[in-house]
Each structure stands twice: as C-alpha cells, then as structure tokens.
Image 1 (cartoon, rainbow, N blue to C red):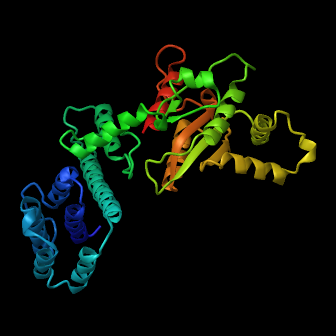
Image 2 (image 1 turned 135 degrees about the horizontal axis):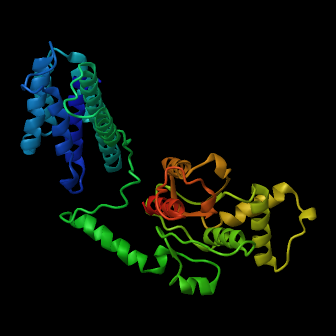
Image 3 (image 1 turned 90 degrees about the vertical axis):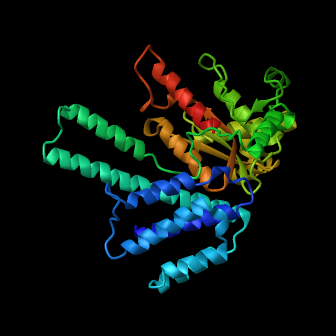
Length: 384
C-alpha cells in the first residue's frame, strides 16, 4: 500500500470521527500514532526516497490535527493539503472529493470502522513483514545468540499468532465493552439490565411450567442444555421449542435495519424428519388431531409451515449438518455469515451439540474435558 494513501486515510479518519455526533471517547488517536510511527527507522529518518518531504509534511499535519483539533475544519484542512500536495493534482482531487462527501451518521460510523480496520490490517502486515525479516536474518546469519532453535521458533510463532487474528466489524471475542467515562454507554448498559428483567427481553415458550421455571422465558445470550436418556424426546423437545419461539414471540430488535432470525442446526435427524415433525406439531396444536400426509402435497405442506413460522415476523432457517464434516468453527462462520447478510440472531437451537467433533478444544484433563470446552466455546461465542 502506498504510504501517501495510508496517511490520507489517517487524515480522513480524523475528520470523519470529528463529524460523528456522539461522544468522541472512542477515537482512533492511538491507532493513527502507531501507524505513522512506521515511517521512521530507528534513527528517526524517513524510509521513503523522493516522497520523503511529502510524507514528513503529512505526518506533521496529522500530529497537529490530533493535538489541535479545533484548528482544522474542512476548509482549513483542504487548504493545508493543497499546499502540501501541490505537485500531486490527481491526489488532491481525490482527497477533496473524499473530505467533502456528505454522509449520514450511520454512513460516517461505517466509514470510520472500515478505515480503522484497514489501518489495523496495514499495521499488522507491516509488523509481520518486520518480524519475518528479522527472523530470516537471524537464521541466515546464525545469530540466535544463546537461544535454542525450539525457543526461537516458539517465540516467532507466538508473535505471528498475535498479529494473525483477522479484524472484523464485530469481533466475536469481545462480548461487551463499556467506557465508564461515557455516560451514554453506561446508560445503554442499564437499559439492557432493565430490558433483561422485563418480559420484552425474553423469549416465551408454549409451556407454562417451563416459562415459570425460566422466570418468564429464555433470555437472549443464555445457554440452556436439554438432557435425557436415549429415546426420551430430546430432539422432539428442542424442535418443539424451535417452533414455539418462532410462533409465540414478536421480534424485538436491537437494530431495526436488520431481519430477525431463529436457526435450527440438526446434527442428527435428516431434513425430512425435522420438517415432518414441525408440520405435525403445528397442525396438531391448531386442529387437535394429527394430519393425514396422504391428503396433502409437498407444496401445501411447505406453504403451511412457512406461513405459520413467519407469522410473527421471524425468518427461520433449518440446517441439516453432517457433524463428521464440521466443527464448532464452521458453525461460528455460518452464524457470522448470517449476521453479515443482514440478520439479527435471536435464538440458535442445536440438536445436538455433543455430536460435533471437539477439534481445537482443550483435551488435557479428565474424561469429557474436550466436550465441556466445546460447550463453553459455543456459549461464549453466542453471548456476543
């Protein structure tokens, strides 16, 4: 990536964060300082050749923007850039268009997140290059000092792993974050506490005693496990819950621009078994008698199920998965794929999780440690 372009992105990020109406406590000041520090070697000399003056001038501008933000509105910023980039007319045209683009508050936030991710990835790429280059030099010149090759390799792997985590708009590893100096963030957290203790924050079932046991219903972010001996209605129970959650609850959205979704992952029963159960379950509860499958067509059954499951506004998806070909990481990727497609997940029902291989889970310890770790990983991921 051209270093001038990176510096322009830094300037754009500062400007767009200024235009966001909410608290600026979550600024990218430290990230930007880290990125621009890459352009100096240990002696403080610019690493660029003929463009070194431009790079220095842009860096000084960025530092001044960070230290004296009130000195730069759009007009004064563009005037400074026109002076610095007077020999780069094409670049100043692009910068002018970028800075003057009018964005909504939502658009500004998306742009800020996108630029932050870009700068984070750029920093990681440069650090990875630096680490690999130094490691290659040490190996080639046999300068490991008193360090063993095993210790050297272990340290190299650790350093690279720390930089290899991909940056996403939503990091599934961060369940929640609150800046206690930001009144709005604390207020939103307390609103969540209030909602958690109201019926509007719960998903009710069709069984009164279960709702009573759950103190009103399932809370989003919780993990529940249905346990029983073989052939004691475990699959039927969770598939019944799947239908109940979709048909008895009106979606209450965190993000109204998204679509509410309930997902069923079946690692045991085939799709036709699940579909038949759902049809019989809905039909019996509505008509108090079992349906005669010989008198209906596949199209009629499909239309009936779709109409009933989507009546309250939920989108519903059922996946039949071969657990031998999957792991918990595949499931996480599928969930993130749904979120990226504009869905907001309200319930994930799994029949049943222990059939998934425990590849990647902690296995050292008593029997069952890997299965316990599998459940913990799924619980922590879904909480976010």
